[in-house]
Length: 546
Image (tube, rainbow, N blue to C red; front, side):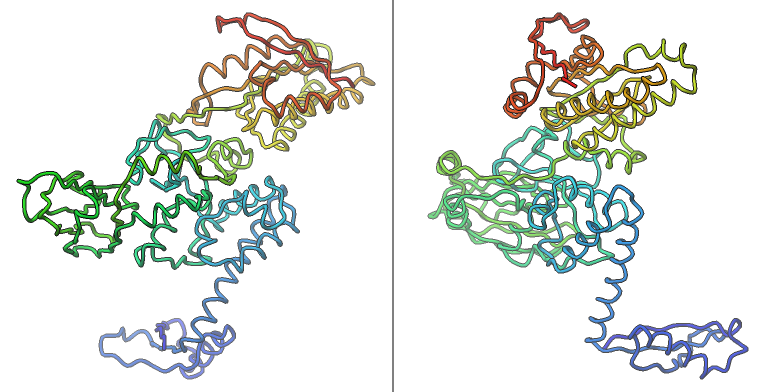
């Protein structure tokens, strides 16, 4: 039986008869199936200016009422999503219907790409729904640092400022991992607690613990799973300030590794020292294990572990066999299903539009191994302003911007910035950048067909390159810096109106090669010295036949 008390201010409700007042309030709550009974409270310490009532309802009603409240909450989020014109109402409805029946395991770390496949959405539709859903409070967005070897989540962050810039440590693999936004930072979405509280207790048992702290996008081979089972010596869970005496067996292995995944910490215990202390002790702190390494004699089989943190923590005990593990991972590699990465998120226009006020650190500097970078410019825009006047010229330039921005968004890219009549855009894949440029050319030609009747036209010039870059903050917005950015800008400078110039890095991409074979394009290979870059580059001029 659950209960709650309500205090009614007699000064406000003094004109009402008290029994009638209680009845009115009870009727209101009964309309929502909340109350089974109500009665006055009489306690000496209650304020005399208020009348207190207690309301009671059963356990079964509590479950029904909670479900009803959650249903109201998700309905409110659904209504909020309707306000975004970029989202289709039928997609929003299907999206909400697909989420409602999901269990906790599927709700706490959701992959938009896998969700799209399972629920008959396109990847773009699913990504847009999740990003907008996080904005209205339907989801919490997380940045997870994922180890490429074991798939373990080394750390999880709420925003980009917390993402490790250069490398991060995996306590399970005892390895330092290069931090890149391409494939090391997994972006996922968990249902917001106001909609549903996730009731998974990772400290309950080993299976739940490992399932909770490892990415579900990594499908390990049966051979690797067997290795994990065979070398899992034990699992322990400790409440705050709790201690245990851990029993080890040096005849099983002369090395044991204790791993606390939620603290991304480990301690290695080596049986190799005959003179070691007979009563070894390890503390589990808020920062992880201390000490991180211990040498023991073969006669010492008991280690005291004390959880000195304020959290309920757990850890696994394994017997690492690195040679065997490396052999299994080489012969039976883990298969990784496509997942939503931080690079893909930063290349999403909706994320930039919705989170443009996110407080990013001026020291932000994050690595991207492969970024497709596009620069555009207009031919003769200054002369057009002189000939057409400010109003007409401005109108034409704005129509051109609208075409560019809509096309960039269509192919999963984002406009990083505008510079006069030019834009800089980025994409996760070279083929997306090329598709965007080709469609831009066709749409600009269609626009010119309308404006030529008035004696005006514009010419679009495009350059595209692919390479590594740093994500940085410039003028309080997310920008990119590096050699690849400079190359892309200089390649655009080679183009004339109606031309798309691409570097050899774009041209050699297999998907781009196939695309060029299928399309009616005039292709010309060139060698060029890129101004300010100081190197000769192989570049290709593409002319769209219209």
